[in-house]
Image (cartoon, rainbow, N blue to C red; front, side, top):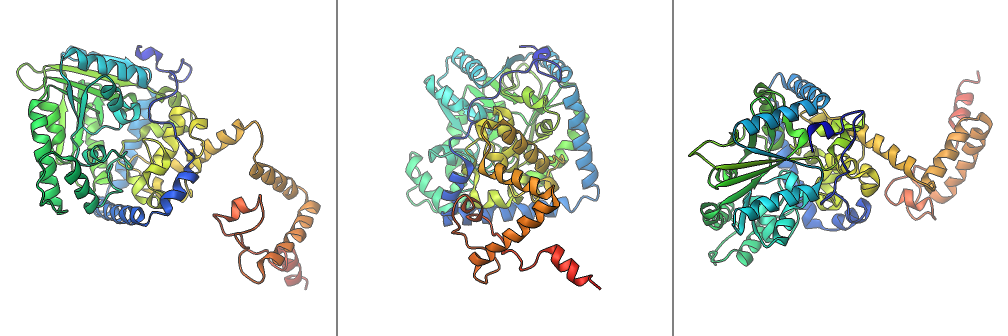
Length: 489
């Protein structure tokens, strides 16, 4: 595939995304189970409030934070408008510096490319840098299916992998686990671990370090994602906090990077903006402890074979949506998850997709097509907190409303809720019908028995509404009646 095939407005689009993006059950069903797990809610509440506090402190230090947000948004908008040009330039620059560029339409193509490249080296092991793109396409499962051993090296990803679990947060995959649970996982799964291992964070980190060190030293192939790819110079960038990424990016003989096509930035100077926005919004740090950049291959220094896999997997279909394409601006900081009241209570697993939280509620349905993740656009209170903290000012609430509209339009049979609102719209369009409806609504006072809200146990279909919402008791007099009485004189 060439960049000309990338589905810019007016051009063909690649297939919708596949991989680990499609939900296995509806968000409401999954969330109900999560809400019954008190330990999960406690873990999430503690972790997200801690990250929120750190972010607020470092963001508050910058008097020009809003200008930085505006700059990030403008850069992303301009990049998406000429995405094909920037990707072609990135390919030229990577190739000129000794790298090899591969284009993948979807998860299947990306997995086939990476698997073939790894098998060609003759190795049986792969070490990985934390990567949302490789989770999105299910790369670990594809490599394991080819008989390869895959080792996650990020501490939180390691916890999830050893616990045979799945990530529940973009930045902190094991956010749903507490120290005691992590200690149990390590004691059960790490060979030769100290029997006296406690849940002290330092001891846990040292146990993971010892477990991973020999894998770093013997690894011949590493797989990474990329936070940014600079078209001007062919430079790839990975930011992280533990140093595991630096080990993977420098020690192996072969490095394979899977990068979503939206991660490209035009110039080296553009990183100046994003490397201020990203760490403050993600980990609450002024800068990431490890910022690794590389371009192609340098003889005698680092990997001597470099492959860049540019992943579409539904992104060009998103780009063709004039409202939703803003979701491609996301720099995967996870700030929206940490402020979302829905995510904090329901957790990441409830979303049933690699991308949880507010950004996942828009990105996953757009990558797969709304009907494959139809419940996710409704997994929000539309409070707007996600927009307020987004470092590139993505208007997530507006995109959610847009996707809800798409879902409603796609229904062959109208839902009971849609029928009810159509009836309400008709009544509100005719004064006589509206007055009759208001009088009829007063019958609801019979169910309230003097309480300010109607009972939750109302009969269907109203029970579907009141099960999760308070429905106020209708007033004794309508607004028109009260207005008439007060202004009669």
